[in-house]
Image (cartoon, rainbow, N blue to C red):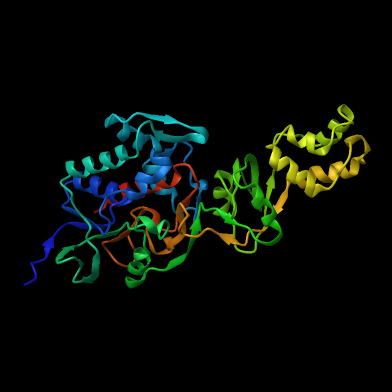
Length: 394
């Protein structure tokens, strides 16, 4: 005989960053909260983030560092729960941290400390957490949501979708959030991989022989540009600059890399005046990894001494090096994507509460929603902020 349904004030689907944050805050507000996740471990994405040290926020968080069909949607949540608020929580738990480049904050020791902190906060709020429970069915009737998981059933007047997106399926990521959204009448913006390596084919695979070479570049797509390292791989392009630009890239688009971002205009003709007997290869080797310098010089096809090369040809080479074009043929997909772009449409949600406009008690937070941050702790900050906001209204 089936056991009777357990009753709660809210059920949170997903024990990731957003779900745990939401549950902990609501629990400490006196609400009876149940968290359900099919994974056998809480916070799996947190554990593998930042090389195992969790890049848990970014001090430069601002709405313009997020992509969404509605660029204004994230403003309210990000303004009400800030990186300083989360940092305060981290410090109260005695977790040592450090700032890396570009405002990124990491744990000194381990990402496990962030998961342990969130679980401790949930415990302080009396939150019930069920791991390893596949969600079999979710229904809504008479103002209550009913969730069947394993051989148990739970009901509540509020349901929070915090199951993330499909990026990194090997840790259990699924598209459940989108199925639930559609079931309850919310639209979904087409999900695609973001913060993901780009793949190259055809002529551009000549760079495959340079797999493992990394150099600082400015990666550009339209008016968007990021200055960080790019890494050449056996499949194409990776590294922080490429992951960043991948969120803006669409199939068929070209991207351009400034391979010498520190060189002023006219530097090659200056080099010709100062070192007329140097070759282009020697000149490039002074600024780039040798293998990359050699490959680029070969492509530019300007043999001999600089002194014998016309200025206009050197200027043309400079232009090419400052905007070397690549047209990726794809990405490495959700398997390698750090996050998902797209997701539950913000058009159906309140930016003040994260609640569905047409269906009281239904909330969506974190990566499940069409809000995607830059690389470097921005997506965790959205998880904390959106989770905290929803918890105020459960």
